Length: 401
Ligand code: C5P
Image 1 (cartoon, rainbow, N blue to C red):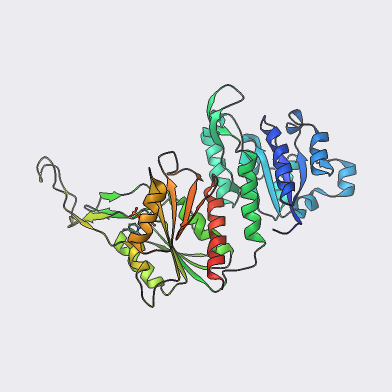
Image 2 (image 1 turned 45 degrees about the vertical axis):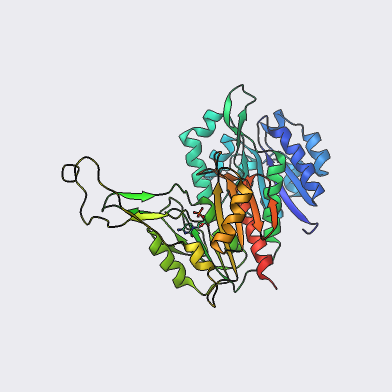
């Protein structure tokens, strides 16, 4: 980490604004400087004086402040930092940013900036779950905004649910992961990396299929982070409701056999990261026409055959084996022991294991254990994009001689 990383922190109006003060201190300790915009509502929760004292800088509050504009125009303010962090990002701030409104200094900075944006939302659970906020969230993600998703717990308003702003440590980890990635020059340039993501679907007949639960979020995030480091990423994905990350070559497949064929077509590769939730079995003999209830009796017999194991196949020793093969393991208990056994069984180099007994599937946060031979690292809870950034960094280190 170099010493001159700068963020522009937008402090929105929410009780969580006090956590932003802790965030400024945490970042300062890591050598990341903060300049702050305090919204009108934000100033109801924390004082400009405390923000100024912690940032050791002027605090920006008004769009139409003659003195501020004379010192530094709002456009310049929005572009001076390497990253804009909105924490707490209120429902109102998200809505304005999703719409492209520029009605105050914070929203104007978000619209005028040419820098990446990271938001840490904080709001009441009903506001968070409201279709309008979820729509804005999806819109902002599609626009490339990164998120540290809110957490579940008791809220200042007395309710319980998702909407509490992530802890300052979690936001600081996401900022750090972003910087450790962006300061690194294109360390994966010239390296081809295969990433599998999403579920596979295995047809029973033309309308029915067997599948696994998988949103594809973690795999897509990894593909994107690797591409940001300059890798030639071949993302082989089952059906998911996600946009293809930019700068990534996407092959869309449905079955495990198609996924394996697409991976093999992408060889030779320097690394493979198998994140897909591949169906272990497929119906042996899918019907050419829709199975009819009245024709097959009470219950159709389901004869299954085993699907190829893509991770195991790619890990097989030989001239075409990628130098680094990484698998994922979703476990509900004895995570470390099961993950170590999986390395041996599959022949891969690393396993990223996570405990899925909680709410990981389809969610945006993840707590993972990284097993590289005998070395076991437990990473702190972080967003799936932060896991992806950190993993991409580790891959780059492993592939660089
Ligand atoms: O055996 P299990 O499904 O728990 O292993 C998970 C790991 O193996 C993941 O990395 C997954 O992508 C990969 N896998 C695969 N092909 C399969 C089954 C799992 O690549 N048929």
